[in-house]
Image (cartoon, rainbow, N blue to C red; front, side, top):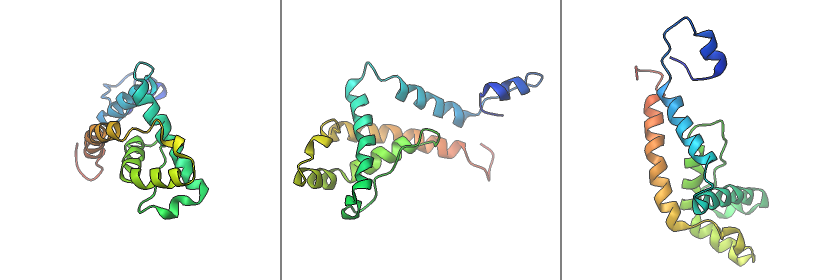
Length: 138
């Protein structure tokens, strides 16, 4: 059982190959995130949330109860963690940015859409965590 990397598949050509379910699940989400041209609100939400992480660099992070999380494309579930952190800090970040005259930075970060997307991605997170177990068969 392996990922579906071309090099791995080539090396396994003489063996029966089984694709890793956790890798396949991650590929589904990666493909979704990379093809959002027909979903401009969702695409805007993801881009806007990623932009908010720059909030960390402004020194204003200390005013939040919890940190905003960075999305890293090579790490599973980080889009979930990013959006979850934006949702949990939404009111505080919005207030701070409005106070600074930077409320425009929240324009594409729709809290209603966040409340739909975060639970949707949470299902994928739970499944990938269950599938990537190392101490038991999956």
